[in-house]
Image (cartoon, rainbow over all chains, first blue to last red; front, top):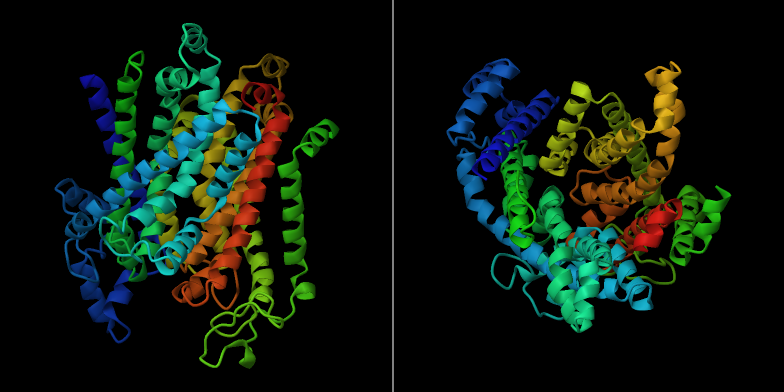
Length: 305
Length: 284
């Protein structure tokens, strides 16, 4: 177990190295120059040169990256070029809100997806099953920002049930539900096919034969076996989820790293863009690891190696 | 092929979807014929006395936008950009993904391993965030936007193709071809690629739904094709601050994106079922 954990953590570090290298390389190879933006239109060549030196951009790219990495391992993600604040401070201030929304969105997605998938699986081939599956496809096919805007329009504006945006306990409901429309759609499709497989297993027939009512067999014996692929899926789909959350944050004005990234992009604030990407990669890989660690708790036959 | 069509024809949702796709493509291609007005023309009577957009009416069937332009015309012309980018991006994703997947799956060894580790890395990167940043920094033409989407989107194809190729490479007919002295290019082209076609057909169809949605998303974030050229996501981006007063400006383009994405998903899913009767019996 400890060996497994160490190996996974080593992989996490390798992934982060790769992510930082790709992000750093891509951004600084691009034609746009953040120093020009920083210096303003009236800057003399000399001022630009000074700025470049101040930000260490007079060095060759590999050296710049090495310096950045050296600081990164000490927890220093550089300074924001526009706001002159530590990037790590900005991300630290925003990350909790994003994580809250993420957890709320996953819970909402599971609450939508699992019951729908189980229901469809137990009524395979009937009209309710087909309706549920087309509905789940529609949820998957709907752009998140459209769903978000429509939710804002109906539930916040027309009906006035929930707040329009901003940060708080009631404010989290609409963005979480917005993510759940698409994500829950995927989960329901996964849950359906997983449950259909499980329903054909011998232990399910045994459970029924010993006299358990159908729903108790499904919920007691089937559910635990059928949920495994979904747990793995939640982990694997983290990258997709975090992107959706960034979009939804911008629709609802949720003060997470998505907003920070957006400001960073608009001002070509490279260290913020790189920092947010790395922070998101950390969240993705750790969530992946967490999902893998959860599987033996659900199914004791699985050993982590 | 005939068999495939016969099986596909029984799938009613897929048939309806094919109709929707056909209609949207024809409407977008024939936009200059069908559109009642120029998409960029601003009408003096296209705004109310208070300067707000007009709801759907007799003259402007789907209403007008913030600048008094006809929404229907903009949707039709926008469809050209959105569909073109979706198709280009999807084609490029398929090409990159197939190339890397086939090579990694057939050559295997160190090169194959390196390619697959790279796809793992791409899964861990919030690639779309990076794409948004790239799109924001670069000049945005149809080609650039399509390329940026493809850079994010090829990973899925590569993984599926890799898995299939590894399976195919171990099959007897491939072994036989190798024993007869066929080199890697000829084995790949004549024996492996034909067997990958069904998978590519399915993922190519499903992929359009993804790329069309990604295009809409980039446009919604303001980093898609530049105004005044319309695109479905761009119309929503322009109008989102007017959501409460003019919800139709979000509703109609949103409905079109949903219809197109859903149709491609349903057709792709039906193709998968039709091409894999065994799986149908097991799961369907």
